Length: 328
Image 1 (cartoon, rainbow, N blue to C red):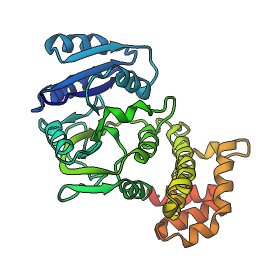
Image 2 (image 1 turned 180 degrees about the horizontal axis):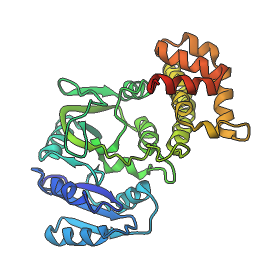
Image 3 (image 1 turned 90 degrees about the vertical axis):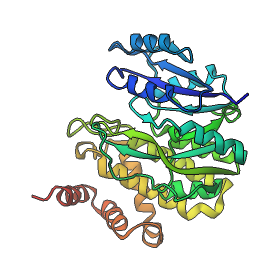
Image 4 (image 1 turned 45 degrees about the vertical axis):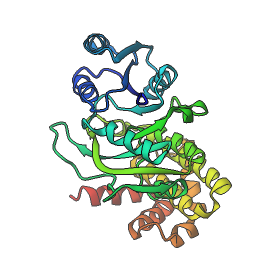
């Protein structure tokens, strides 16, 4: 008997895309699946769609809960899962029919706890977009420390949607709730429990980039908390690296500076004030790390230029950035 996979799909107001997502899971060539649709308090009829889909395929199980966010829904799915391995699919994405077949074949052949498939990004019309994560040319075996190094260089894929994970690893860990950038935070912790990750080259997971994304600003002064959470995660990672992976210190410093640069490039100018404690802490951190900025070999010249400018004159730096991006 083949080992079962539990595929967890957090669902919230996904009436226009859920069916395509679920169909792509149901048509997997690896048939030993249970599909857990965790309805996170949908209000647009998605809850009824979940029930209809469950009636059409006995492998689908639907659970309804009060709204608590994607991490909360995933954690409910982890608790309910009975498979040996867990997979995660976001409700607006879809997957290739052989994705889990390929991943389970690799998990069995190489006896690894985490297998990663490659991904691509498409727009709402299905048109390919530039790759965010470059797939390897052939199957790659990546040591956990090397994988963390690549995450710190923004070269790795931290998404759990592209991972097949042995359920045993979740006995100790859960997705952090109430924060964003949660996949990165959990994966960094979980890397301590494994020796390596197998990365498969085929781009079987399709990320659908919708116009209303988590990090996209709706108005000039709106601001996603993801830019706060990435800074917090950078601090947590720096502490972990210095304790467990001291050889990666310079990479973690680069990551910390880069994440703060990302925050500064997105925080609304109206919030760059003396009474914004988080903003002032970011500015203080940058000014304390002038030397690290100048000498770090993993920051680009453009990174260093903006970081130094933000240290000296934050609002002018934002104006320069706006001019470069949107020249008059």
